[in-house]
Image 1 (cartoon, rainbow, N blue to C red):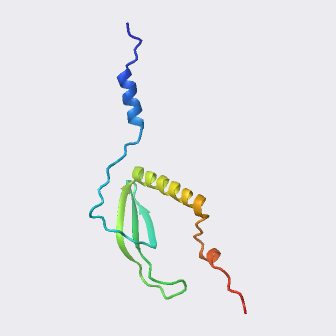
Image 2: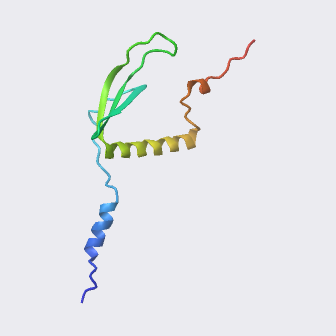
Image 3: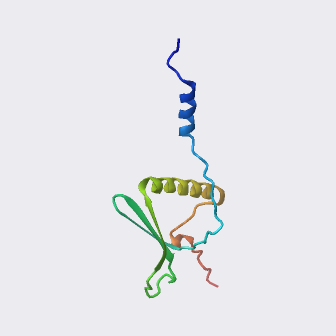
Length: 112
């Protein structure tokens, strides 16, 4: 007699819920530096544009040249958002808050 449980199906269920470690091949990877990012989207996908903003604050506006575009579905975008959040949280716990407001990062100069 069987109690209806199947040990194989339990093992398969556990394996299906555990994340799979992907093998990454980065031999021909070209690094990209960006200090500008723009997010836009469509109902099916999210579009991330990256580029280099060459202008200093208060300078004449110069167009930002977009050098890379990443298009992902919303499932991948959410996994990316969660991974970035976890990495940023770990970084801030180690090194302190990453302040994105430039005026709060500037150290006032002493008047001599």
